[in-house]
Image (tube, rainbow, N blue to C red; front, side, top):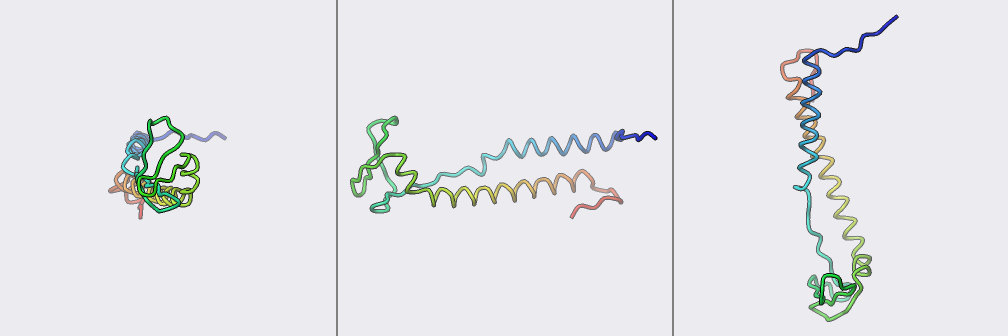
Amino acid sequence: MSLDYSLSHTACITIILLLFNLLRLIMNLDKHSRTIALQCPTCGGGSFQSETVEDTEVKCVQCGRVIERDDLLRENSENIQENLEEMKSDVEKDIARQMRKALQDAFKGNKNIKIK
């Protein structure tokens, strides 16, 4: 008993189009990028200064507190995590929406396959 798994020309084109659309979506994820404003743990200010970009410490412009960059990140970890979760949710929804649309477009007019 042998099984023939060859795909029709139309099925191959459909798969290629789906893969192309998925690749296009992945390459366009920069639309989900965002800036997360860090806040001073002392005063809640959002402006910091440092002598150079390589400095390990930054100074809050509002209250003058000097804090290590790593400590600033750690103090803002909850805010960072919330933003990451929101971004993750947005990306997942966008991927699902794009895949659904790609499948609907690929099988448009097919009486046997309906995508909702």
